[in-house]
Amino acid sequence: MPNNNFYIGYMEKMPASFRKPVRLFVLAAAILFSIGSFLIVRSQQAFSTATFELGQLTTVEGILRMEPAPMLQLETGKDSKGRPILQSILLIGFGKHGAEATLEKVEAQRKLKLDGKKLKLEGTLIYHDGKTLLELTQKEKSILDVLDVAPLNRQLTELGQISLRGEIADPKCYFGVMKPGEGKTHRSCAARCIAGGIPPILKAVSNDGQVQYFIIEGEDGEPINEQVLPIVGEPVQLTGSVVLYDDWLVLRLKDANSAQRLSARFMLEAPMCNSGKLN
Amino acid sequence: MSVNYAPILWNRQKKRYDRIMLGLITLYLILFAAFQLLFRPEISPETLIIRATATLAFLMLHLILMIGPLCRLDRRFLPLLYNRRHLGVTMFLIALVHAAFSIIQFHALGDVNPLVSVFTSNINYQSISQFPFQVLGFFALLILFLMAATSHDFWLDNLSPRIWKSLHMMVYFAYALLVMHVLLGVLQQEGYPAGFIFLGIGMVAVSSLHLAAAIKGKRQEERPEGTTADTFVPVCRVDEILENRAKVVIIRQENIAIFKYDGKLSAINNVCKHQNGPLGEGKIVDGCITCPWHGYQYLPENGQSPPPFTEKVATYDVKVMDGKVYVNPKPYPEGTTRPAAVIGV
Image (cartoon, rainbow over all chains, first blue to last red):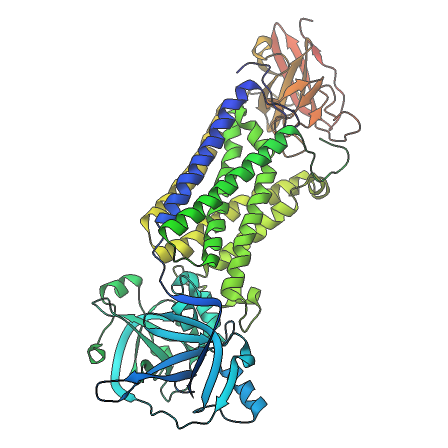
């Protein structure tokens, strides 16, 4: 290098011989950024097609059911035998909270019990894979009207003791608010949502790739949100009795501590076990 | 080099540097969003922001870490080093956007303070595979914040160069934390081999450049042996030193730069008081030894920065006999005037 080539940052111009390597570095950075952005985007796993209608409020009417979790029960038609076809919309609070607190405040304000009443609700819809949720976005103001009506019958079916492999997630994020709404990167959020009262769900995948969702509760139908927090967002095997509430499956656990942690590899090899009764 | 503190001393080079930096950042963000909408349109806007800023900041950190050793390997990369702090502060701000969106997304509107939630929502601290990776990112961001906040020379003077340099060397610890943050976070979740390959290439590039620079530095070090303390040690022939340049030697742990100028030789300590830059790789400009890293200057005969600046380095005795240069490695107190050795006398 010539002896007169020397660069100090406060010089207005760099020596001519310095330009080539500096330009090469800038060009390499531009290529790295261009190719890097492409490869990083392409190598991501696909995101789910779940929907959260952010900013769009929808009005829904139905019968409020507080078991197994706050839900709005809707009759969507009749089957060939004339029996009502029921759909249950899981109700979720604003932020990382369950709907109970909001409903209890409204009960206190109106001095009445809401369970079994017909409610007119306004909230944000969340839906994916045949399941629908409604976020009570405007908190107490989300309950527009309360009406006394003859309650619809519940369709309960006991399905017995079952062992299931899958991942515990929070339904609000999984069914649309976040992408991805499961796995390790989402674990903290799922734990926060479940700790805030949103019912935990188990996402179980059968050997043929069919996904089923189970609301998790205690043996007597009590919430066990706190107990499942240590195993949220990781592969687990849970054993309990399954009950079908209308169109939602519920897994009742005798003891959340009996959950078995699984490796991700084990999950891939045998995703769901002993699930025959569900098919 | 400036007597008064100013937020930024702008010049043409700095403006060009920042324009190119902002251009590349804009290019990345536009391409990332475009590719995302093209190939993965189902992504939510929050996840898009979180992933775009995370990957951009991490790529920028790799480039920042490569600039130092590149300059040691070839001084023609020095224009990249001079304004590196702008690159570092910008990288921190991008990482901050990533962290802020992640904390709001994953921890806000819950039953506890979002910052408390970062540490308590996943408590598998005893497990390697299930370790709460967000905590690693949090501490890395804290280090990057301390570095960005103290990047101005005001802090260099007030903290002392030794503490300031130690603080800024923590970038390597932050890098290690971020590698684990990525490994135990998104790579574990996504499980794609390409991600592990990208990360591996980045780590190899950073570490191999540092290794190559260290090997080159070691090879350039000359360590002539002195017989006893306080004696002159032969270094080289006079004609081996270029005019206005230096020969660097390490004798009994003393890092000495011997400069040749105006038919004379003077020796000063090789380590710049600003950021430990290698003065011996600098040049005499306008009668002053000028550090190649940030242009700090010292007078060759007394190791003092010209008034009104106050930096001082140690000086050494030099002599010339039969065309050979000798230096006495016993240092004089910083800023002590020592007569230059006149060549040919």
